[in-house]
Image 1 (tube, rainbow, N blue to C red):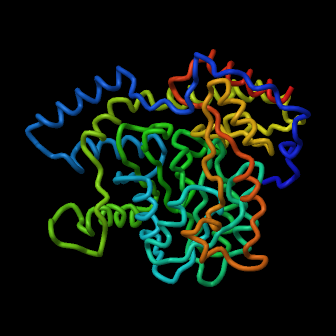
Image 2 (cartoon, rainbow, N blue to C red):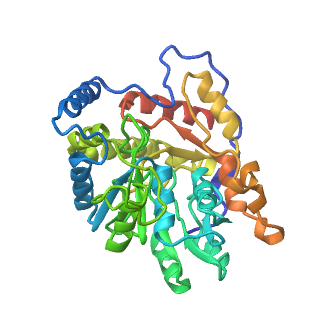
Image 3 (tube, one colour):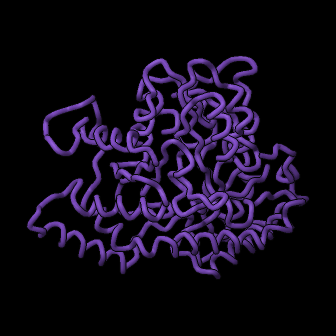
Length: 396
């Protein structure tokens, strides 16, 4: 992971003049379900609703989705559950995190990274991120390991996978578990290995805006360990083993998967690679336009397929707010995801640390500089080009 000074620290010589709002607006996100998928959803709902089996959670469709996702990822087992947050909670419990343990999480990222740790009674320890890639810094993370550390949770962020080989290496040295948060990275690979399969346990999210999102909540947990997968299956269903009801082997959760959503995901599973490929193509189209701006104040994500996921296309610049206003003036949406590092949020301030332990300059830079541009399956090439035109004009 590089920590060199980013060209995004250089300001453009002058911002481009504002323009009146364009009539052809480009929203940041497109939340409407495409017509073909709306029809598919109606068909699946009717099929499940009229099925003689009348099983609406954890039925044969869920089992088939689990089997096929495991086959696609090249992993031993996949367990479907109710949400990405639920998947992370199940994974932490499965690897043995108990009250009083410490779990290392990135200081820059989504709230569940820390909230789920607290939810199982453990203590989140916030490690810094690389200011350029915005993912967990393995060196800083290892420096925060203590004799109470039970696990580390590297999270793939925006368009970049965490440095899993380095994280895996120090976790083995320090004998701690790796819970790989690949919520945003289904379909991505690093060194030929699928995201979600690097850790002792991993997860994907099916939240609507994720690469293989669906019109509802849901997620899966992945593992090559039969023991961990079996435990996750029990934990997601109140500690029951799925064979004998009302016999609870441990205190679990209600984190079960919906059969309608399972049928919906199964029906479009063969399209998953195409969906990821289209998002990658949009990212590469942006990258080609922004390469010349590196020395003028804009840092774009890394090009290429290895280690890249395509959930959010986030550029970095110290003129972030001015660029967002410029885009809005031209009718183009953008978004700041994490404006404040997790340890500076009121919810987690008690775990921020003191003195040197509280310093996380990479996370501060990532929070202050990132701006996400439109990236969704409804974008046309002309809309991508117009967005790039407006960004480039800002740095002229």
